Image 1: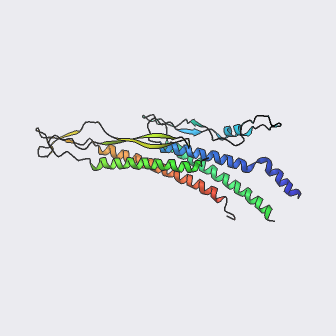
Image 2 (image 1 turned 180 degrees about the vertical axis):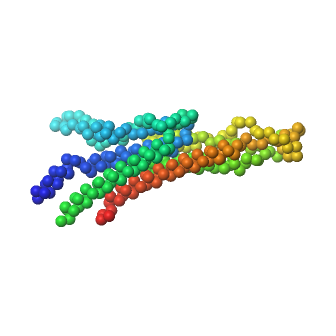
Amino acid sequence: MGLARKAAAVMTPIHLFNVVSQHNRWLAARQTTIAGNVANANTPGFKALDVQPFEMAMEQARLTMAATKPGHMAGADANAPAPGVRKDETWDVTHTGNSVSLEQELIKAGDVNRAYRLNTSVAKAFHRMILASAKV
Amino acid sequence: MFDPLQASLKIGASGLEAQSRRLRVLSENLANANSTGKTPGADPYARKTISFESELDEALGTSFVKVSGIDRHRSPFRIEHNPGHPAADAKGFVKMPNVDIMVEVTDMREANRSYEANLQVIKQAREMISMTIDLLRSNS
């Protein structure tokens, strides 16, 4: 009983699943911008894009005010908005004004993939822990 | 609410389509590298060029790629002296297509490379989707 409470105390403040799904949402958005960059790798004048760093997205999402009276206006929505897209600093710009570097994009895609795998594995491990306590 | 991973599959597919259209135009150019006219002084096959543009999808907020047009290249034709040719003019000169095989093959390599990059993006997006689905699998 005491152990269960301790486990709950450890797990709830971390908001682990919440953070994992937020990070995964961010990674998915990043994958989309990478796909757009790669698809436009030969479009004249196309500027490569990237999403804002995850830390920035987290900071915007975290601060929400609790309403103590019904008349209070809500602050920022707790649900993270779609990450904003910014112009990327890329390795080279070709003569046509296209700034997509395929190598760089594929490295970023590999990065995204690795982080996504890490997140899903961590979520899976925690899920197993919860299941283990539920099944006893 | 859209799924960004599904969107990246679609964007990758648009890239694949654009690059394969490019490959089609290139193969047309290569196949017609020696196609001349039939009547004296007639123009031969003119090299075709393809151009891309990015298209913003309002619903998804992302940029697809699409073929903006296939045009004729405006560089001058090659002139060869070949009096016996049916397309030779009064002085015996024949206009040959303005296709440079070297340029076409280089372009083909680039199209190939971009195609592969798009495939890679699709593959990774698919992997990410299946990783998410695997969360539901128990005892694995």
